[in-house]
Image (cartoon, rainbow, N blue to C red; front, side, top):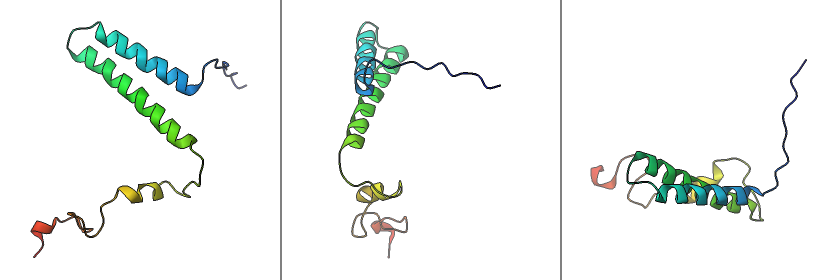
Length: 94
C-alpha cells in the first residue's frame, strides 16, 4: 500500500511566495548584528530574488531551446576573444 501524499492548495503564487521570503529574510537580517547568521539571511534573500528573476525569464513567451546547452551559447567566449577554445589565453600562445 502506498502512502497518500499530503497535498496543500497554494493560496499565493510562486512569485509572491518568493517575494515574501526575500522580504522576511531581509527584515530579519536587519535586526541582527554583523555576523554569519545575518549573512546567511541576506544570502537567502538574494537567492529568492534571483529565483524570481529566473521565473520571470521562463515565463516569457517565445521559442525554447531543444536542449539545456543551447541557452548558454551567448555567454561563451568567441574565438576572437581573450580566451581561445583550447583553454589557453592568447598571451601563452606562440
